[in-house]
Image: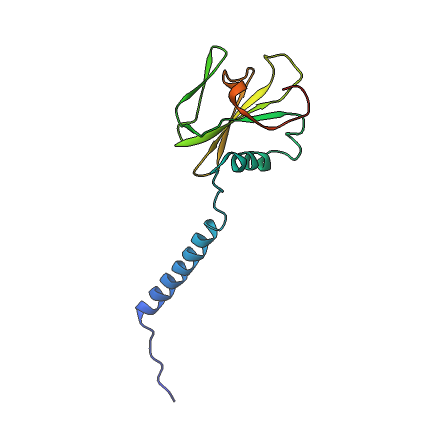
Length: 146
């Protein structure tokens, strides 16, 4: 008859550590599987915003974008008021969405700020367009007046 040897106390600890490490590495690799997209240019910024808003949401709206990304913390003047670019973004694309293109001003509109690095965005609801609205590039048209 074979003599049974007692397992080393380290065997159980080693098995536990290997299991924990395997689970941690698996979970860690899954968390990076879907990295946020970057918004390196204006088209990517618009695509990120459009994809995260309900389908067809922009069909009745006019959408404008600034020529260059804007530094986080800077301000956008709008009819005597200033809208701040979120400071959590180093730089962000600024998109202006006119929700009611046929209405006179002081109606619903939105300021979108899309992080160049992460693709995350912030929305600021407003009632007036930015002062530099006429200098911005129109990237989507509802077919209604500008």
